[in-house]
Image (tube, rainbow, N blue to C red; front, side, top):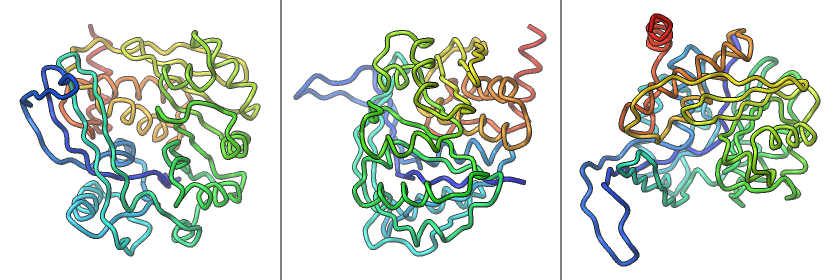
Length: 309
């Protein structure tokens, strides 16, 4: 069976729930707070909970946060590809979720911002595997070039999944220009797609993305409660979402991405993989915390129950 090789960043989230964000110079009390593994961990947890073997091909640190990251990955059954920890600790993200279920982040990069081609070659990428490439990785000087060179050298039979994230805002950067022709699967939310292209409609953004990406690229663009859009070879479909009461949107997009790739790896067509991903994201927003993706059995049960309603 194929595996996912996740080349992004596992960090530790300090997750806090607040009624509203403080004004500049202000202060608010949080209703809850806790340390959780986050960042790339969320996607990997979603994938492995839905039957896809996962290897973390990113750095992890020496210290309290590195220990937490490794413990979380080991508890999920995620294989740690780069065995030796870096000398510095894993980074930290403060994740604030307000009463509207929206979240805001402040991140500090640690050991996960560094990698070498030798590190990346710790585990072989085999035909049919899915290499998950996060746009955040392009922002780290200690990682970006080595990861790009390694990715471009992969066999054509290895699927490259690209998640731009919120900070990659243009296709014009030199590294982005090099990576675009190698992308097999694009996964993002609508805001990220619109910002990346500079459009104000999802359909326009997807059409322009199709002009930049390879002919057979599979695109999935999440549209919040509305579900998602998928497009391949000029054919675009909307896949409806599921009605739920959201309490925390943190990690919902990651749940969607992980479950979507797991579905593709198990031979599902894009439409069915997207339907399952929508269900996973819907369940994820009903729970507090970043890595709240359900597993296969729960996704199945949720879809069956939704069909009866």
